[in-house]
Image 1 (cartoon, one colour):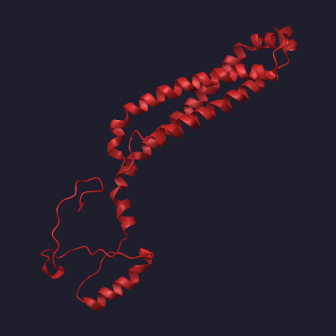
Image 2 (image 1 turned 120 degrees about the horizontal axis):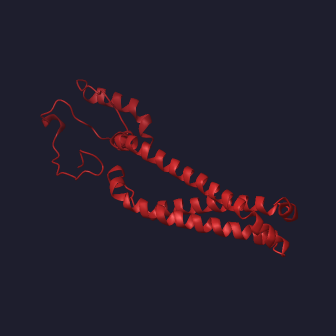
Image 3 (image 1 turned 180 degrees about the vertical axis):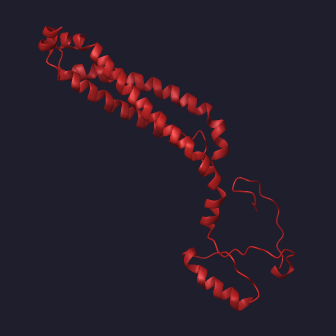
Length: 202
């Protein structure tokens, strides 16, 4: 049986009669096929009839015990999750800024390409490809940093590997999709610029 937590080693246990227990406080486990929360009143009445001298002070479900056992981990994970979300947001904002600057610096080049026959779709493709390359580089660096931090996260997780491929893959897909959307919006703004007016103004 496990006493120190879900990830604690299981210790041998000896089962004996309740009346032979030396301690004045014990735990009684009840299995039910129905809703365990709705069983509390019935359980109190049954115990009162069977053992009137037995004081029932607390009835909790296994789900509540599970939540209590990992409560400290959840508290420690909140800042980590917050920093992760903030890092992704900063990365996306930074990517948007880089693309906006790249579009601004290449406005003349894009205008010349358009005058020479490049279609708006081709102009959009140039910016989107650049954004995808930046996103790919960021995802590769981020996955490397995440794998490096896996040893620290291992003590905060239960039932999930810190190198869970589904989690890493989901984050990579999300960041790539967000970068693709940001690139497309920046490229569409660039494609809407009238090239002749831009060249005259410069």
